[in-house]
Image (cartoon, rainbow, N blue to C red; front, top):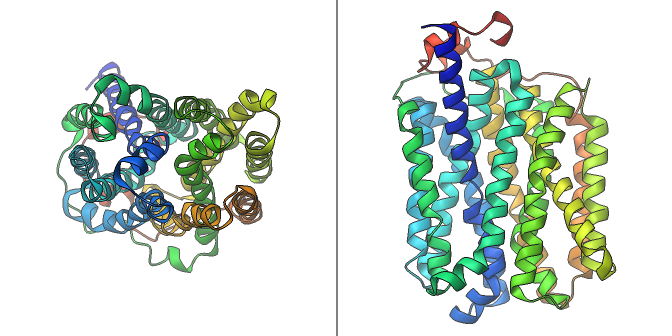
Length: 414
Protein backbone atom coordinates (compact mmCIF):
# COMPACT_ATOMS: atom_id res chain seq x y z
CA UNK A 1 0.00 0.00 0.00
CA UNK A 2 1.30 3.44 -0.91
CA UNK A 3 2.02 6.10 1.67
CA UNK A 4 -0.86 8.17 0.24
CA UNK A 5 -3.29 5.27 0.69
CA UNK A 6 -2.07 4.66 4.22
CA UNK A 7 -2.52 8.35 5.06
CA UNK A 8 -6.07 8.25 3.67
CA UNK A 9 -6.85 5.18 5.78
CA UNK A 10 -5.50 6.93 8.86
CA UNK A 11 -7.74 9.91 8.13
CA UNK A 12 -10.81 7.70 7.71
CA UNK A 13 -10.02 5.83 10.91
CA UNK A 14 -9.63 9.12 12.75
CA UNK A 15 -12.93 10.40 11.34
CA UNK A 16 -14.76 7.22 12.38
CA UNK A 17 -13.25 7.49 15.84
CA UNK A 18 -14.51 11.08 16.12
CA UNK A 19 -18.04 10.07 15.12
CA UNK A 20 -18.06 7.37 17.79
CA UNK A 21 -16.79 9.90 20.32
CA UNK A 22 -19.52 12.41 19.42
CA UNK A 23 -22.17 9.97 20.62
CA UNK A 24 -20.62 9.17 23.98
CA UNK A 25 -22.28 12.00 25.93
CA UNK A 26 -25.75 12.97 24.58
CA UNK A 27 -27.25 10.00 26.46
CA UNK A 28 -26.02 11.68 29.66
CA UNK A 29 -26.31 15.40 28.91
CA UNK A 30 -29.92 15.28 27.67
CA UNK A 31 -31.36 14.18 31.01
CA UNK A 32 -30.45 17.27 33.06
CA UNK A 33 -32.39 19.85 30.98
CA UNK A 34 -35.42 17.53 30.95
CA UNK A 35 -35.17 16.48 34.59
CA UNK A 36 -37.91 18.81 35.84
CA UNK A 37 -40.21 17.66 33.03
CA UNK A 38 -39.43 14.01 33.76
CA UNK A 39 -40.21 14.53 37.45
CA UNK A 40 -43.50 16.28 36.67
CA UNK A 41 -44.56 13.59 34.22
CA UNK A 42 -43.59 10.56 36.27
CA UNK A 43 -43.83 11.72 39.86
CA UNK A 44 -40.14 10.98 40.38
CA UNK A 45 -38.95 12.44 43.68
CA UNK A 46 -35.71 14.23 44.43
CA UNK A 47 -34.13 11.01 45.70
CA UNK A 48 -35.13 9.18 42.52
CA UNK A 49 -33.73 12.04 40.45
CA UNK A 50 -30.45 11.75 42.34
CA UNK A 51 -30.36 8.02 41.56
CA UNK A 52 -31.15 8.71 37.88
CA UNK A 53 -28.20 11.08 37.60
CA UNK A 54 -25.96 8.63 39.48
CA UNK A 55 -26.94 5.42 37.68
CA UNK A 56 -25.12 6.11 34.38
CA UNK A 57 -21.87 6.97 36.15
CA UNK A 58 -22.02 3.72 38.12
CA UNK A 59 -22.75 1.76 34.94
CA UNK A 60 -19.79 3.41 33.22
CA UNK A 61 -17.56 1.95 35.90
CA UNK A 62 -19.15 -1.49 35.65
CA UNK A 63 -18.74 -1.47 31.86
CA UNK A 64 -15.02 -0.80 32.17
CA UNK A 65 -14.64 -4.10 34.02
CA UNK A 66 -16.25 -5.86 31.05
CA UNK A 67 -13.85 -4.33 28.52
CA UNK A 68 -10.87 -6.65 29.12
CA UNK A 69 -12.71 -9.98 28.56
CA UNK A 70 -14.51 -8.49 25.56
CA UNK A 71 -11.22 -7.39 24.01
CA UNK A 72 -9.75 -10.83 24.69
CA UNK A 73 -12.67 -12.52 22.95
CA UNK A 74 -13.31 -10.33 19.90
CA UNK A 75 -10.53 -7.72 19.84
CA UNK A 76 -10.67 -3.98 20.47
CA UNK A 77 -11.85 -2.90 17.02
CA UNK A 78 -14.97 -5.06 17.03
CA UNK A 79 -15.51 -4.22 20.70
CA UNK A 80 -16.00 -0.56 19.74
CA UNK A 81 -18.86 -1.63 17.46
CA UNK A 82 -20.33 -3.73 20.26
CA UNK A 83 -20.27 -0.75 22.61
CA UNK A 84 -21.91 1.51 20.02
CA UNK A 85 -24.64 -1.06 19.34
CA UNK A 86 -25.44 -1.36 23.05
CA UNK A 87 -25.61 2.44 23.23
CA UNK A 88 -28.13 2.56 20.38
CA UNK A 89 -30.32 -0.03 22.10
CA UNK A 90 -30.29 1.86 25.39
CA UNK A 91 -31.18 5.17 23.77
CA UNK A 92 -34.06 3.60 21.84
CA UNK A 93 -35.37 1.87 24.98
CA UNK A 94 -35.83 5.21 26.75
CA UNK A 95 -38.29 6.21 24.03
CA UNK A 96 -40.87 3.76 25.37
CA UNK A 97 -41.64 6.12 28.25
CA UNK A 98 -42.18 5.33 31.91
CA UNK A 99 -39.69 4.96 34.72
CA UNK A 100 -38.65 1.36 34.03
CA UNK A 101 -37.59 1.96 30.38
CA UNK A 102 -36.01 5.26 31.46
CA UNK A 103 -33.80 3.69 34.12
CA UNK A 104 -33.10 0.50 32.15
CA UNK A 105 -32.30 2.39 28.95
CA UNK A 106 -30.06 4.81 30.80
CA UNK A 107 -28.13 1.92 32.36
CA UNK A 108 -27.80 0.09 29.04
CA UNK A 109 -26.66 3.21 27.19
CA UNK A 110 -24.08 3.91 29.89
CA UNK A 111 -22.67 0.39 29.57
CA UNK A 112 -22.14 0.93 25.84
CA UNK A 113 -20.52 4.30 26.53
CA UNK A 114 -18.27 2.77 29.18
CA UNK A 115 -16.96 0.12 26.81
CA UNK A 116 -16.03 2.68 24.17
CA UNK A 117 -14.58 5.02 26.80
CA UNK A 118 -11.96 2.40 27.65
CA UNK A 119 -11.14 1.54 24.07
CA UNK A 120 -10.62 4.97 22.52
CA UNK A 121 -7.46 5.95 24.50
CA UNK A 122 -5.93 2.55 23.69
CA UNK A 123 -6.70 2.97 19.97
CA UNK A 124 -5.16 6.44 20.01
CA UNK A 125 -2.03 5.05 21.65
CA UNK A 126 -1.84 2.24 19.08
CA UNK A 127 -2.71 3.97 15.81
CA UNK A 128 -1.72 7.60 16.53
CA UNK A 129 1.19 7.27 18.95
CA UNK A 130 3.21 10.01 17.24
CA UNK A 131 0.36 12.52 17.67
CA UNK A 132 -1.25 11.25 20.87
CA UNK A 133 -1.81 14.69 22.39
CA UNK A 134 -3.47 16.06 19.26
CA UNK A 135 -5.72 13.03 18.73
CA UNK A 136 -6.66 12.88 22.39
CA UNK A 137 -7.59 16.54 22.23
CA UNK A 138 -9.57 16.12 19.01
CA UNK A 139 -11.66 13.19 20.15
CA UNK A 140 -12.19 14.76 23.56
CA UNK A 141 -13.30 17.96 21.83
CA UNK A 142 -15.69 15.97 19.63
CA UNK A 143 -17.05 14.18 22.68
CA UNK A 144 -17.70 17.54 24.34
CA UNK A 145 -19.46 18.82 21.23
CA UNK A 146 -21.79 15.85 21.42
CA UNK A 147 -22.49 16.61 25.06
CA UNK A 148 -23.22 20.27 24.19
CA UNK A 149 -25.55 19.27 21.39
CA UNK A 150 -27.49 17.04 23.76
CA UNK A 151 -27.76 19.65 26.51
CA UNK A 152 -28.75 22.50 24.22
CA UNK A 153 -31.15 20.62 21.96
CA UNK A 154 -32.98 18.56 24.60
CA UNK A 155 -35.77 21.05 25.38
CA UNK A 156 -36.16 22.45 21.81
CA UNK A 157 -36.30 18.90 20.43
CA UNK A 158 -38.94 17.98 23.00
CA UNK A 159 -41.06 20.94 21.87
CA UNK A 160 -40.49 20.20 18.18
CA UNK A 161 -41.32 16.51 18.33
CA UNK A 162 -44.35 16.94 20.56
CA UNK A 163 -43.88 13.50 22.06
CA UNK A 164 -42.69 14.58 25.48
CA UNK A 165 -39.42 13.63 27.10
CA UNK A 166 -39.34 9.98 25.84
CA UNK A 167 -39.06 11.00 22.20
CA UNK A 168 -36.61 13.80 23.05
CA UNK A 169 -34.32 11.21 24.65
CA UNK A 170 -34.81 8.44 22.06
CA UNK A 171 -34.05 10.63 19.03
CA UNK A 172 -30.35 10.47 19.92
CA UNK A 173 -30.29 6.81 18.93
CA UNK A 174 -30.19 7.93 15.28
CA UNK A 175 -26.75 9.64 15.27
CA UNK A 176 -25.44 6.80 17.45
CA UNK A 177 -26.69 4.32 14.86
CA UNK A 178 -24.99 6.30 12.10
CA UNK A 179 -21.69 6.22 14.01
CA UNK A 180 -21.97 2.45 14.43
CA UNK A 181 -22.42 2.00 10.67
CA UNK A 182 -19.41 4.22 9.92
CA UNK A 183 -17.27 2.09 12.25
CA UNK A 184 -18.22 -1.21 10.58
CA UNK A 185 -15.31 -1.18 8.06
CA UNK A 186 -12.86 -1.01 10.98
CA UNK A 187 -14.68 -3.58 13.15
CA UNK A 188 -12.65 -6.67 12.35
CA UNK A 189 -12.79 -9.58 14.74
CA UNK A 190 -9.46 -10.54 16.27
CA UNK A 191 -8.49 -12.80 19.12
CA UNK A 192 -5.91 -12.23 21.79
CA UNK A 193 -4.75 -13.82 24.99
CA UNK A 194 -3.08 -10.58 25.99
CA UNK A 195 -6.02 -8.31 26.69
CA UNK A 196 -5.18 -5.54 29.13
CA UNK A 197 -4.76 -6.75 32.69
CA UNK A 198 -4.90 -4.58 35.77
CA UNK A 199 -2.90 -7.05 37.87
CA UNK A 200 0.38 -5.14 37.89
CA UNK A 201 -1.34 -1.77 37.65
CA UNK A 202 -3.24 -2.39 40.88
CA UNK A 203 0.13 -2.55 42.62
CA UNK A 204 1.45 0.62 40.97
CA UNK A 205 0.92 3.83 43.00
CA UNK A 206 1.11 5.99 39.88
CA UNK A 207 -1.78 4.07 38.32
CA UNK A 208 -3.83 4.80 41.44
CA UNK A 209 -3.00 8.51 41.31
CA UNK A 210 -4.14 8.66 37.68
CA UNK A 211 -7.28 6.73 38.65
CA UNK A 212 -7.97 9.12 41.52
CA UNK A 213 -7.68 12.20 39.34
CA UNK A 214 -9.85 10.64 36.63
CA UNK A 215 -12.55 9.75 39.13
CA UNK A 216 -12.61 13.13 40.86
CA UNK A 217 -12.73 15.18 37.66
CA UNK A 218 -15.44 12.85 36.36
CA UNK A 219 -17.43 13.46 39.52
CA UNK A 220 -17.33 17.21 38.83
CA UNK A 221 -18.47 16.71 35.25
CA UNK A 222 -21.39 14.46 36.12
CA UNK A 223 -22.55 16.79 38.88
CA UNK A 224 -22.83 19.47 36.21
CA UNK A 225 -24.49 17.14 33.70
CA UNK A 226 -27.14 16.11 36.18
CA UNK A 227 -27.73 19.19 38.34
CA UNK A 228 -26.55 22.41 36.67
CA UNK A 229 -29.83 23.01 34.77
CA UNK A 230 -31.87 22.49 37.93
CA UNK A 231 -29.51 24.75 39.90
CA UNK A 232 -29.98 27.49 37.31
CA UNK A 233 -33.74 27.00 37.37
CA UNK A 234 -33.50 27.52 41.12
CA UNK A 235 -31.95 30.90 40.37
CA UNK A 236 -35.02 31.89 38.35
CA UNK A 237 -34.20 30.72 34.82
CA UNK A 238 -36.78 28.94 32.69
CA UNK A 239 -36.06 25.30 31.74
CA UNK A 240 -35.23 26.44 28.19
CA UNK A 241 -32.82 29.15 29.34
CA UNK A 242 -31.24 26.82 31.90
CA UNK A 243 -30.73 24.24 29.16
CA UNK A 244 -29.10 26.86 26.93
CA UNK A 245 -26.70 27.87 29.69
CA UNK A 246 -25.88 24.21 30.26
CA UNK A 247 -25.33 23.87 26.52
CA UNK A 248 -22.99 26.87 26.50
CA UNK A 249 -21.06 25.34 29.39
CA UNK A 250 -20.85 22.02 27.58
CA UNK A 251 -20.00 23.58 24.21
CA UNK A 252 -17.00 25.45 25.60
CA UNK A 253 -15.74 22.16 26.99
CA UNK A 254 -14.65 21.32 23.43
CA UNK A 255 -11.92 23.97 23.04
CA UNK A 256 -11.02 23.51 26.70
CA UNK A 257 -10.42 19.80 26.17
CA UNK A 258 -8.57 20.27 22.88
CA UNK A 259 -6.24 23.06 23.98
CA UNK A 260 -5.52 21.61 27.41
CA UNK A 261 -4.77 18.14 26.06
CA UNK A 262 -2.49 19.47 23.32
CA UNK A 263 -0.57 21.92 25.49
CA UNK A 264 -0.36 19.71 28.57
CA UNK A 265 1.01 16.84 26.45
CA UNK A 266 3.89 19.07 25.36
CA UNK A 267 4.84 20.05 28.91
CA UNK A 268 7.58 18.32 30.83
CA UNK A 269 4.94 17.21 33.31
CA UNK A 270 1.32 18.16 33.90
CA UNK A 271 1.31 19.34 37.53
CA UNK A 272 0.93 23.05 36.76
CA UNK A 273 -2.00 22.32 34.47
CA UNK A 274 -3.63 20.23 37.18
CA UNK A 275 -3.57 23.27 39.47
CA UNK A 276 -4.70 25.84 36.91
CA UNK A 277 -7.56 24.04 35.16
CA UNK A 278 -9.46 22.64 38.19
CA UNK A 279 -8.81 25.98 39.93
CA UNK A 280 -10.51 27.81 37.05
CA UNK A 281 -13.39 25.34 37.27
CA UNK A 282 -13.98 26.10 40.95
CA UNK A 283 -13.96 29.87 40.53
CA UNK A 284 -16.28 29.76 37.51
CA UNK A 285 -18.73 27.42 39.26
CA UNK A 286 -18.99 29.65 42.30
CA UNK A 287 -19.61 32.73 40.15
CA UNK A 288 -22.25 30.97 38.04
CA UNK A 289 -24.02 29.40 41.01
CA UNK A 290 -23.87 32.31 43.46
CA UNK A 291 -22.51 35.38 41.64
CA UNK A 292 -24.07 38.35 39.91
CA UNK A 293 -26.41 37.82 36.99
CA UNK A 294 -24.24 40.05 34.79
CA UNK A 295 -21.37 37.54 35.15
CA UNK A 296 -23.47 34.51 34.29
CA UNK A 297 -22.46 34.17 30.63
CA UNK A 298 -18.67 34.54 31.09
CA UNK A 299 -18.84 32.26 34.15
CA UNK A 300 -20.68 29.59 32.14
CA UNK A 301 -18.03 29.83 29.43
CA UNK A 302 -15.15 29.63 31.91
CA UNK A 303 -16.81 26.70 33.71
CA UNK A 304 -17.15 24.82 30.44
CA UNK A 305 -13.54 25.50 29.47
CA UNK A 306 -12.38 24.31 32.88
CA UNK A 307 -14.42 21.13 33.10
CA UNK A 308 -13.51 20.24 29.50
CA UNK A 309 -9.87 20.86 30.31
CA UNK A 310 -10.13 18.59 33.35
CA UNK A 311 -11.48 15.80 31.16
CA UNK A 312 -8.77 16.38 28.57
CA UNK A 313 -6.17 16.22 31.33
CA UNK A 314 -7.58 12.95 32.63
CA UNK A 315 -7.40 11.25 29.24
CA UNK A 316 -4.01 12.79 28.46
CA UNK A 317 -2.62 11.39 31.70
CA UNK A 318 -3.78 7.92 30.67
CA UNK A 319 -1.99 8.20 27.31
CA UNK A 320 1.17 9.87 28.65
CA UNK A 321 1.65 7.73 31.74
CA UNK A 322 1.26 4.47 29.78
CA UNK A 323 4.43 2.88 28.42
CA UNK A 324 2.71 1.21 25.46
CA UNK A 325 -0.70 0.42 23.94
CA UNK A 326 -1.27 -2.56 26.24
CA UNK A 327 -0.55 -0.42 29.27
CA UNK A 328 -2.80 2.31 27.89
CA UNK A 329 -5.69 -0.14 27.60
CA UNK A 330 -5.07 -1.50 31.09
CA UNK A 331 -4.66 1.94 32.63
CA UNK A 332 -7.74 3.21 30.79
CA UNK A 333 -9.81 0.31 32.12
CA UNK A 334 -8.54 0.84 35.65
CA UNK A 335 -8.76 4.64 35.70
CA UNK A 336 -12.20 4.78 34.14
CA UNK A 337 -13.61 1.64 35.75
CA UNK A 338 -12.63 2.43 39.31
CA UNK A 339 -12.76 6.17 38.68
CA UNK A 340 -16.32 6.21 37.38
CA UNK A 341 -17.50 3.84 40.09
CA UNK A 342 -16.25 6.28 42.70
CA UNK A 343 -17.41 9.29 40.68
CA UNK A 344 -21.02 8.16 40.89
CA UNK A 345 -21.06 9.26 44.52
CA UNK A 346 -20.58 12.89 43.46
CA UNK A 347 -23.94 13.54 41.76
CA UNK A 348 -25.71 11.31 44.30
CA UNK A 349 -24.40 13.15 47.37
CA UNK A 350 -24.79 16.50 45.60
CA UNK A 351 -28.46 15.75 44.95
CA UNK A 352 -29.11 14.40 48.43
CA UNK A 353 -27.44 17.46 49.96
CA UNK A 354 -29.75 19.69 47.95
CA UNK A 355 -32.78 17.67 49.01
CA UNK A 356 -31.76 17.78 52.68
CA UNK A 357 -31.00 21.51 52.80
CA UNK A 358 -33.35 22.87 50.16
CA UNK A 359 -30.55 25.10 48.85
CA UNK A 360 -27.32 24.98 46.92
CA UNK A 361 -24.78 26.16 49.52
CA UNK A 362 -23.84 22.75 50.91
CA UNK A 363 -23.81 21.09 47.47
CA UNK A 364 -21.62 23.95 46.23
CA UNK A 365 -19.15 23.39 49.06
CA UNK A 366 -19.06 19.70 48.09
CA UNK A 367 -18.20 20.64 44.50
CA UNK A 368 -15.29 22.80 45.70
CA UNK A 369 -14.01 20.05 47.99
CA UNK A 370 -13.96 17.52 45.15
CA UNK A 371 -12.02 19.94 42.93
CA UNK A 372 -9.45 20.60 45.65
CA UNK A 373 -8.99 16.84 46.14
CA UNK A 374 -8.46 16.45 42.37
CA UNK A 375 -5.71 19.10 42.47
CA UNK A 376 -3.93 17.42 45.37
CA UNK A 377 -4.09 13.91 43.92
CA UNK A 378 -3.24 15.21 40.47
CA UNK A 379 0.14 16.46 41.68
CA UNK A 380 1.28 12.86 41.95
CA UNK A 381 -0.43 11.79 38.73
CA UNK A 382 1.14 14.65 36.77
CA UNK A 383 4.77 13.64 37.27
CA UNK A 384 6.68 12.45 34.22
CA UNK A 385 6.72 8.72 34.92
CA UNK A 386 5.39 5.60 33.21
CA UNK A 387 3.27 2.63 34.22
CA UNK A 388 3.46 -0.71 32.47
CA UNK A 389 0.89 -3.49 32.49
CA UNK A 390 3.66 -6.03 31.96
CA UNK A 391 2.16 -7.37 28.74
CA UNK A 392 4.06 -8.73 25.72
CA UNK A 393 4.83 -6.40 22.79
CA UNK A 394 1.96 -4.53 21.21
CA UNK A 395 1.60 -6.98 18.31
CA UNK A 396 0.21 -9.52 20.81
CA UNK A 397 -2.50 -7.24 22.10
CA UNK A 398 -4.63 -7.98 19.09
CA UNK A 399 -4.08 -8.57 15.43
CA UNK A 400 -3.81 -5.19 13.77
CA UNK A 401 -6.61 -4.54 11.26
CA UNK A 402 -4.56 -1.82 9.58
CA UNK A 403 -1.19 -3.56 9.36
CA UNK A 404 -0.18 -1.93 6.12
CA UNK A 405 -1.18 1.42 7.56
CA UNK A 406 1.11 0.88 10.52
CA UNK A 407 3.91 -0.31 8.29
CA UNK A 408 3.81 3.04 6.53
CA UNK A 409 4.20 4.94 9.79
CA UNK A 410 7.62 6.26 10.69
CA UNK A 411 9.47 4.40 13.37
CA UNK A 412 9.09 7.28 15.80
CA UNK A 413 5.32 6.76 15.81
CA UNK A 414 5.36 3.18 17.01
